[in-house]
Image (cartoon, rainbow, N blue to C red):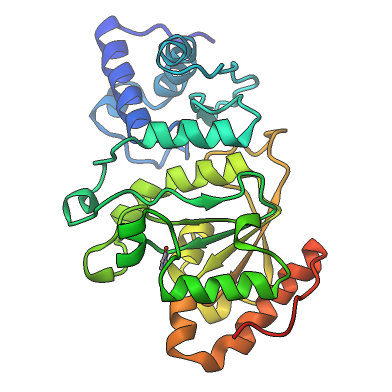
Length: 298
Ligand code: URA
């Protein structure tokens, strides 16, 4: 049934939807009647927001067509429980273009406090946009912040060795982090920083469509899987993985597996765990049909 909205409420909701889009959030979910609603939500329930999100699609498409050269296809078959404003890269099938659009959308990001805590530059991600294998770390350190590329310091050297031992080159895979700006003093990124940044990582994964994502360390594992178990409990098996924001029935999402292993920086501190990490990588290699180049990574 079409929703008739009071014009003032419609404007308020439209503003809200655009605000979320600016934050990189395009998807709205109705969790059920127990969900706490905000001032706008309380007045009207979330249904108008979902309906408006869909109604705004054509407006958004026109705006985006003006802003970007990408063509955005209409989203068909919206369920009442999931409303997705089309992401700018939605109907772009070429991952190179899709990643460019996501990078453009990220802009000179000031969405979380990391932008004013000493970052030199945003570290977006690097590698093959058509990679079958993707590695996700925690966040840039000093070297990455200086060079604008993930995993270029000591941990990066070990990650390179791990990739080589798997029979691949660094250029074959794609590498990114949960947060794209260096946390001061290399502290662990805080939950609000991860929550703000991870929609962009999810969009990168959705664009690249790797067969396997390897989460390096607890921050990556917990954010990608939305699980709070220990790393020891999470590693050693595959998970079916779908990036947040991809619709459950999206025909463009071919499915991916996710494996968890130790972060290379942790392996530098405790090299005795390298054997366990190698087991995780061998599980991935078997699935991808890769042959080890030599032995376990040094
Ligand atoms: N550690 C990470 O998690 N990511 C990097 O890019 C470098 C070190």
